[in-house]
Image (cartoon, rainbow, N blue to C red):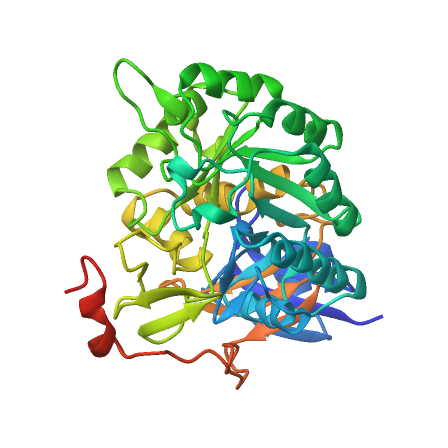
Amino acid sequence: MSVLMLKGNRIYTPQRIVKGAILIEEKKIKEIITENDRVDNFTGDVIDVRNNSIIPGLIDIHIHGTGGWGVTGGTTEDIRGLTRYLASKGVTSFQPTIGGNTLDVVKDSVNNLRTVIEEGHEGAKILGIHMEGPFLNPEKKGAFKVEYLLKPSLELMEEFLKIGNGHVIHVSMAPELEGAEEVIKYLVYKNILVSGAHTNANIAQTKKGIDWGIRLSNHTGNAQRSIHHREPGALGGYLLDERVDCELICDLYHIHPDMAKLIIKIKSVDRICLISDSIEATGIKPGEYNFLGRMALVDEDGWSKLPDGTIAGSTKDMIYGFRNLVKELNFSMEDAIKMACVNPARLSNVLDSKGTIEVNKDADLVVIDDEFNVMYTFVEGKLEYSKDFNYDYCNPKIIPVRTMKEARGDYIGQC
């Protein structure tokens, strides 16, 4: 049985930063060694990352796509392309997120994800399926089409779960909609995480949803009723209740940097879950694209908008948000790891095996340099990405419909 040594001067364990080595055997962390003589006398395979940082693999529980690969409407080939791309960006496990579309597309997407999970795949590990909708409030539709949003239906939810064959683990919905109480309580009974999402709920309705079992605020601050001094709204309700964790997009575009600091200060680093909410436009070249019949413009800085100026999901990866937490918002690496690794693992019910660098846990490890470039990614002990791999992980089939110059005049705020 082969053992690999990952050697480095900055290994981020839960207790402290360690200088030494991690022994990887099969899928697990066999040992963390700090004695110099044992490290120096090891005779097996060694990867020495020197002063680069070794952190737990990033866990993204809200992601619609990236690198030209999409979840909603994606084929099994697309999903497998997505898992490989994510590993190249330091994500070792994730919850692929299905967004709004026709019921047939949503059901096919659940089925395709189930197939990939059950057949196995390379790259980042799929923890389970996240369904963002279709039970969302049209008043807070965000980038979703209104015709795809439905009132909560227990019968339809049961059908989704049946297709998913036990792999749907997270559902985001608006608690103020008629029929929401029954669906939320049913999902909680099934031990499925429920997020309050795309919601125009007032504070009283938000509190009811939490009492029914909502335990997560979906992309906090976005597509939810905000705070007014006479009506705290959904945002106020989720920030105040200690039973609720808060997702946070930290691209510093969806949320102002000071607002991000405020949210984290109120909830604490122990109750914030960093997400990307990225779409398949992430990481592709500028231009106008057709994503499942929806036109979107990706500008020179990578931001994506609909023709009416609405932000069309995030176009930055988890490692970008992780870097922002440290470099722009001045949180420690240890606190950033809590928000990007530990808390997502807890919310996904995998903290016993993922989220931290500890003996007997899965060897989900990422090596980053001081500029937060990903150097190596290990998923359950397997080297899934190296800076030395000569491979393009983007979807080669994704090409722009029009160039930025041709399309930008048709987009509000892009002239």
